[in-house]
Image (cartoon, rainbow, N blue to C red):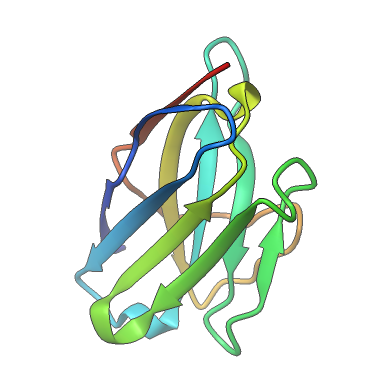
Amino acid sequence: QVQLVESGGGSVQAGGSLRLSCVASGRPFSSYVMGWFRQAPGKEQEFVAGISWIGGSTYYADSVKGRFTISRDNAKNTAYLQMNSLESEDTAVYFCAARIRGSVTVSGFDADSWGQGTQVTVSS
């Protein structure tokens, strides 16, 4: 497993932007699938975005496609989630997740490491 620490959450008005960061430590970062999940109050956790460990292919939930961008900087052991055109429905706790040499699809991936979560609140 790898240790994950998120940052960058906060409160923003609808239409605004935030960038989440996830710093990993403990294992070679480049070998990990990285991704973001979120959980809104009273709802189940859902996959938001993922990036593969080979080739950097990206995958997104339909609800965020075109608005969110996931990226990674292997030299900094950091994954990012750039969130633009935020909507009130994006309000949730966002969790960084990882799996060593895993596979990711538009449905998500089976993470074995999780961050503590960071709150994102979008007001309309």
